[in-house]
Length: 88
Image 1 (cartoon, one colour):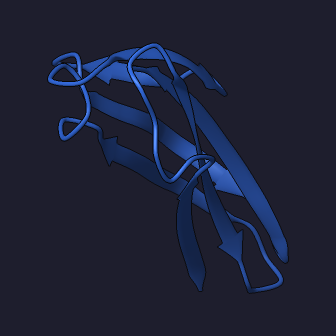
Image 2 (cartoon, rainbow, N blue to C red):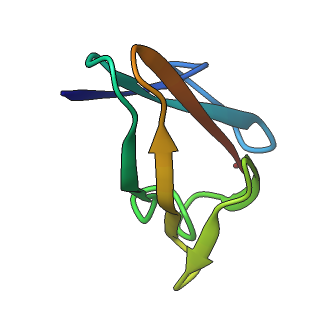
């Protein structure tokens, strides 16, 4: 079973601030899960309010506001972490 969670480091922000997002994907079974595709639609923020900054690991960006980490392997009983930033 995979459990995904997304958090942002600020509840309020002003123009010029950077918002740092963290997506975690927890694998709760003992064996790895392969071929996992993680996507995030950041269109509510980009391009209306800000611009995409960076991501770790590097995400594929399509349409300027769709992030994707394709064909990921999440090891058994572990959590994979994906981060990205948006500058307002």
